[in-house]
Image 1 (tube, rainbow, N blue to C red):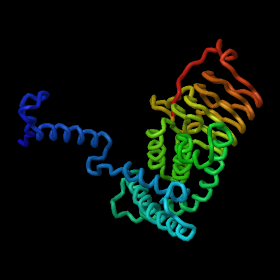
Image 2: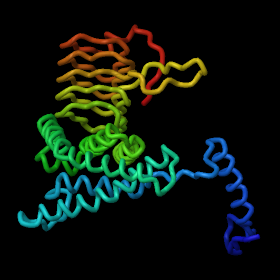
Image 3: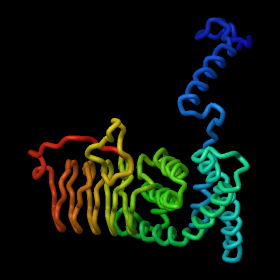
Image 4: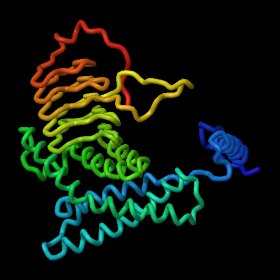
Length: 317
């Protein structure tokens, strides 16, 4: 039996020996039981790597904004070469991760040509969508600059604002979600969530000129739809009111259950908006409002107006 020798001076262990082999055996038994429960004993999952995806997300951000997020000494003559090189390296890494996801979903053998070919197609189509992503992000950055009197430049917005970091990851992840790589998309969004405290499901549909001010605690669910020129403040939730179940008692997944926010809406800090309701164009939702009913265009909703309403359910992605 393999033992880990604990130093005699360790007050925590008091000189005891830890039998590593026994721990390994117990962990192996639990692991095999889990694989059997998921019918994967002979095909252990090889998921995409979060560590690699962190590098991919950073690489894509540098491709989109090379002068501000790329190398510090780029010149007009070298920037295109840098973008081309970074794009080639990053897309190759992404293709490997996409293939991992496809193989995991299909449970195919590592040499499967179908997964390889589909991974190539997804990666190529994703690359073709990057100019559109860049255009959307330009509108988001401009909206943040115009909407925050503390912003001194669009460059400051890009490199300092957590809302822009989260939106950048979301816009990249959304394209991958739509192209058939939802697990990688979710992982990329969660990388930003960990860094910013802003959670945006990659399945959400968000138009341009989107601004999240401050941002910590913002939650945007999978089926939310957000129009142009929408502004959210910290701790806003666009969540689900209730979760229907099927005849077996399992949650029904994928059904529209999150709000629709039309153009030119402002939602202030701490507001909780639940269910498949519509916030009409040009409306303002006040801070700490709890809302589960649609409001017409041009509405101003405050705590006073919703104080006596009784709601049920909770929020979720």
